[in-house]
Amino acid sequence: MPTPLPPFQITFVQLSGRALSVAELTSPVLDEAMHEEGRVRVGFGRVSMNQLMIDEFQMNSLLAYLANQAKLRETLEKQLDAHHETWDAQKRIGRGPAVWNDVKVSHVGFDPRAASSSESLKKAWDVIGVEYTEAMLEKYQNCPDTHSRFLVALEGNWFDAHGRMVDFRDCEVVEFILDG
Image 1 (cartoon, rainbow, N blue to C red):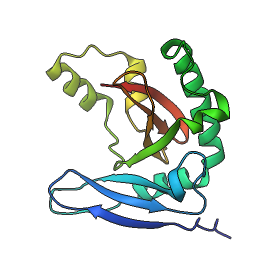
Image 2 (cartoon, rainbow, N blue to C red; image 1 turned 90 degrees about the vertical axis):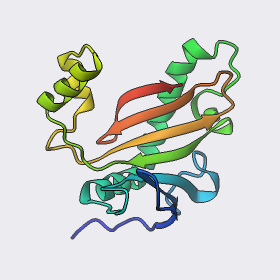
Image 3 (spheres, rainbow, N blue to C red; image 1 turned 90 degrees about the horizontal axis):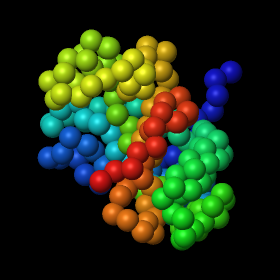
Image 4 (spheres, one colour; image 1 turned 180 degrees about the vertical axis):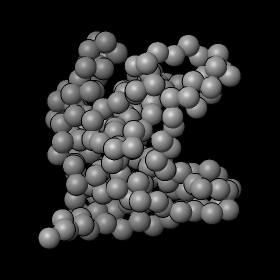
């Protein structure tokens, strides 16, 4: 018997003129501590400027996000705790489960598979002059057996101007990103 889908609704709020289509995702399975009022903004990478298509990989990623809320919450708490050991010495942001008093998930991005080959990544990085390692190639490419990938953007009362994002592949952290 197939696993039942979690209940959810997607309402698109921006469809034209951007490479990313923005929607509001609502679901009773969204962790209440991490999300405001059972909702979160989500973005879907576009096939073209004139066409929106949510592919199977993006849908699998969305379902993985919904189905793994407890694991993602625990992982994000650990990531934020480790990050704040070096970035928030005055402890302005809560630690562990208390972090959700100060931080919320603001946006989740679901891009198409983009199964870049090692060769295409190397060529792109050569063009822009980025030195790469095999570990970088492993981190940034989606393998054929990758089932899901999403980027979780966090908003909070940060004491600096940087955004915080966490890149997940198959519900495991690929990278904690300090943006800006």
